[in-house]
Image 1: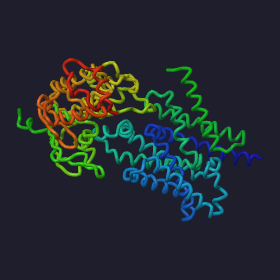
Image 2 (image 1 turned 180 degrees about the horizontal axis):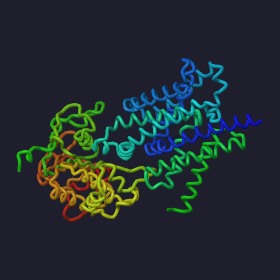
Image 3 (image 1 turned 60 degrees about the vertical axis):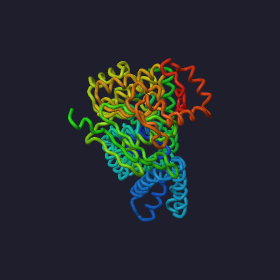
Length: 270
Length: 259
């Protein structure tokens, strides 16, 4: 009995640690996703993650590595295509988001072992977070936050007005490319926690909630990290108590926080 | 005066740009000297903003040559900048984004453009006129040798438009910088410009504003623009801003509804 409780404790703690680590990275990055109106871009990356799983499995690679690889490739491809085709940006994103998800599902259907886990890939399985997953979340997460901090000022300038930033000397193309790569990495490591279909929510919902109280971009990023952490903790607790799926519970908790932030803001305007 | 003072800050010749099959700019020549205010005027879609973007190095021309004075600092005021509501940003922070400046420098710049009160206001909450002044302050904080202003008075009421052009003139006089701006309306900028370049894909005519105003090429361009579908606006705008000194025939052409 004692051993059993110990084991439970173990994976619950890992789940909590993984979720919190992700929330802290998703907050600042998600703020930029909101400011730059890139929610759909994030979605396109997230939907391709399943294909990464399938290909990783096919070529016997580490699955997270497979997802990172596919997400990064797609981010590069989308960046080039958006510059060069005449199709509207959201059409291109829609094509890639849904066709990569479709291809991912088709490939997975050929693999019996993966098909069993399909639901957990789509909606996340935070309780299955391994020590290796934790290493990915904290290692990649720290790198992403470090690079984001370094690019903060030019990226913010770009997000306000790209031409003005360029005239003022910002290397816009490089900074934008770096940002989509950071986004690809975070999407890849978030997949385990909330799943392919809910990653974008973890990026934008806490950031949107934070907007209602923030007075500066940095404050919004910090509040978003905090809101995300709160959503992870309460969603995880709810999923243990009510035996609900963890990923959706976390996103639902974030949505409740967002609704609360709007309500509080309405009743007590600063 | 050193000989360098007479060299142009910016010189472009034969600038040509096509988008697909459409020739947007056709062998355009333009130069801005130190202390000179050059205004590019032209109807909607004449290629004014494209020309500015090429001169700023934001867009490569298909052909043509351009030269800038070495190491020149440019202050740029873009057209139609709207900061997203989701971004919490005070004017102070907005100014600092362009240039890491001291508190005193920011206050001085806002003072210079006549908007000293807005430093701690959220950028989305300032009025149209104040916002244009804040943009101008951000350009000035770079201590520019050349100011490039794309439709600097848009979103500003008529009295405010005249004030802004007067301000630009004062800034040129005080700082001795060159100014290149785009406007859709010659008569508002007449008093605040040295040279007018009338653009409709190619340069129709160029010269002092008084000369351009009576140039047949200018009259043909703007006479035609207001004779057609814009008759409705003609009437409307006569009411809104017919100040006596620019109640002229060509005042009310196309681009008042620029947007």
